[in-house]
Each structure stands twice: as C-alpha cells, then as structure tokens.
Length: 76
Image (tube, rainbow, N blue to C red):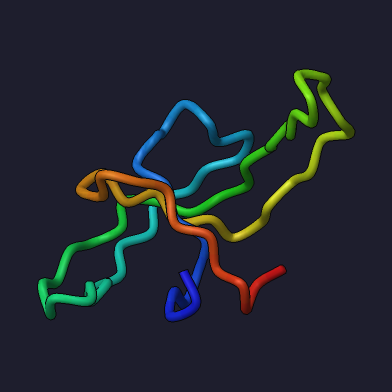
C-alpha cells in the first residue's frame, strides 16, 4: 500500500519478537482501528515454488482488526 505508514498484519503468530504497542491507525475510509503490538516478522518468499532466503521485517504492527496484510513501500 503506497499510503501505508508501517508494515501491518493481523496474524499474531508470525511475530518473532513482540511487545505491546497501541497506536491509532486511520484507514482509507477514515475508520480508526488500533494496533495491539509491534515486533519483527520473518518472511520466506517463494519463487517458482522454491523457497528463497528469508527476509526479516522490523517494527511491524500487529493490527488484529485488519483483514489483510499491509506492506509499506516507505519502510523497505
């Protein structure tokens, strides 16, 4: 998401590190939801069905009310 201010996921089990962290997040429709935590998430991409080297994203927000993962192009 080009307007996303941070990487975000609703999936708590993906976090390698985690700390409680509550911040308001305004969605595109002006709805405000809140993060529950922040931490690091390891991602293992697949190319043509083969796993590649893992990538760790830091300062990812855990946002349980999201229905999808959001990737911030500003934080890569």
